[in-house]
Image (spheres, helix red, strand yellow):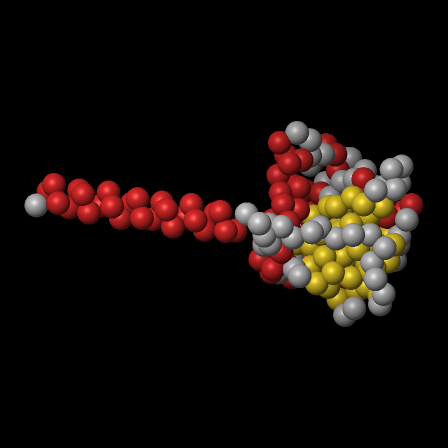
Length: 199
């Protein structure tokens, strides 16, 4: 059974929700997103040659970073990196050049699935089962579904990234702070007025 039937490919509003962490990085919340193990992967568009950004959950094993495509080979970021493996990885405020390649070894794929489920087995067992068209999955049966997943190994390396990361725009912070303080002052004045009227 196709993964597409189990988990529809995000379009419209769902696609925008999946892209929301990109805005989070742009607005300076990369540290929080990285704490949730969400990174930005920048690939070169295979047709346009333009930098394309995708927000993806990741796990790290030693120097390697792993991501899983929930929709197999369909996502543009995956097809882009197959065409051009040189990528840029952004985790919090850390930006590095990297090389990305699909994982073809079933032993390595199994290790990656274990890395993902280790954080919250109850949640990830359900996700992995759904994506692999199984009723249930646990640590004993995980090896049976490694072939159902498209996994990418990312190897960070020295040197300047050839693709630009998402630029952090903190210009919104001062106006937001002024508005926040203004709302607090208005709230305090309204509370004082209500207290005077009730006394």
